[in-house]
Image (cartoon, rainbow, N blue to C red; front, side, top):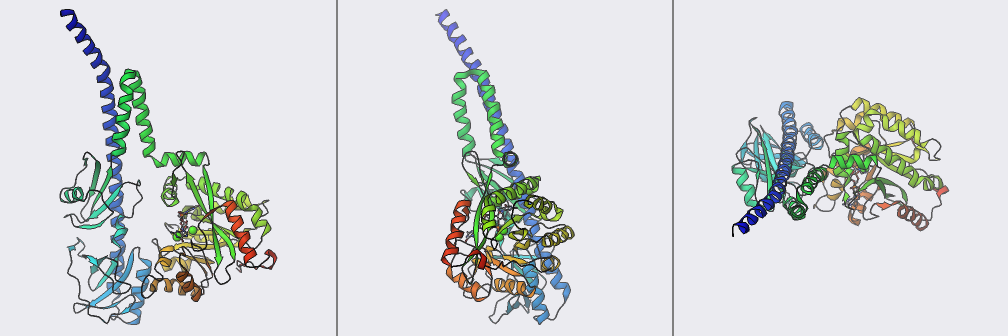
Length: 533
Ligand code: C2E
Ligand code: CA
Ligand code: CA
């Protein structure tokens, strides 16, 4: 009996000796992963806070300008200023002017109906009033917007802009006032948790989720993410580790931590993808709207991870821009475009390919030099490579102006991309040497959905014409949109109505087929990009 109990005790000790370190290691790695995840979420919440600040400050700045201008209410100059501030302010949908407690006019004209001044839901430290759930007078009235009012002016903003932050796909974000009044949120699986966090913001976890918050005087931001993946991965590891013992446990745990860290870091993954040149291009046909001819394509970069999942460029391009990887990526894109499209471009001299450049690429002027070098001896004419410069994040306007002017001298056609979406203003447009303006998909989307097409779209087209730029409309999906753009003499367009972005061989076939269908041999076609400096 004594022997039996000793054996049992030894067995138990051995078992505990084997299990405890494993359990301890698993526990340690688990809590470290959890802390890292929570930290990461907290950083996301902090970035959301900054985003909310930027949206709010931009609105406030516009309101101050309007109040300081002291123009006679609803006079033509007043309407003009309201309109230009609507266009140049991020996330602004409409600016309004109140007199005697009612809305007199907006950036889109006089208001006939009686629209009373809203009762604010919240007053900020700057003395501005915030009202939620406001419906604009113009448009179909379906959108629920946020009104920011200072003095007699208010600005209607899309609240989703306050949470418009790049985060891991399953992270959900919300922004509120410090007293817990919700301004904007992404769809949440657990609305009760959100309510709890609004009342009492803190970092932590529930059995299903991890959450973090960030707060300052003006805003409260909350980030919530499921932890299902974390739980499952670690349980599985535990069962494999027990029979393998401590050594196996140490190795597996270290590997586990290393792997989960790696998985969490899009940056590292992107860095190695750039090093290994794991990208390819799709080409979205660009169509001359009144003839239907395919005049070229926009080159769009594609990244498939090792596990086969695709990462969207609007997710990884900003990361590449932040981390300085963009230079190498842009170089790679140029190489791909040249090797994919060389033959087509030599065969059809009227065809062009548009390459997207980031603000940094443009400001430094480096990308242009690299491109010129790569084109030498390729047989491709500089006129056949168009450059799309996004206006997002142009800090060095002087640098951009110099390098865009050089690009045009070299023969490239230069278009401004996403105009009206970022932080840009009309001022930018006038200062930059440009050939074309790309109308962002968000403006094309509004065509035909409102009883009257968004006045902004029409205004952008007019503006391009005034400045002598030709226009390319992006994201055309319906024939109603096409008909409208044709009626407004927009020259070129791209979108799913014509074709989705295609792999190189499919684009070559598409281009060929269109050319036969519209009966134009390459020699007959005029290059639409004839540049006169
Ligand atoms: P973008 O330059 O505004 O490109 C247009 C985006 O709209 C593309 O998304 C395109 O696939 C999509 N699109 C085109 N037509 C339609 C349509 O009819 N309906 C819908 N729903 N979408 C349409 P994609 O390829 O995901 O690219 C997103 C953004 O990533 C681009 O926006 C551009 O800013 C950036 N990007 C893509 N490729 C590159 C690149 O090579 N270099 C740089 N710097 N940025 C790139
Ligand atoms: Ca583009
Ligand atoms: Ca765009």
